[in-house]
Image (tube, rainbow, N blue to C red; front, side, top):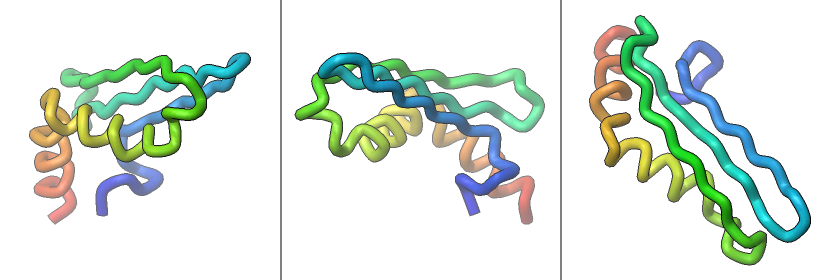
Length: 74
């Protein structure tokens, strides 16, 4: 399963005033590949940031890393 305690992914969200600062990434198991995302959004637009950030990470190359993680777990 992707996203468990041993999966090399991270997310950090911080609220400052009326804005959400979001950072996330996914790494290959050997740490050689890293796909990152950073967003700053007004709080009223931040409800779906987890979903949209994950989708963008996968589209930017994270899908290949996710596939390698799944294959390594087999």
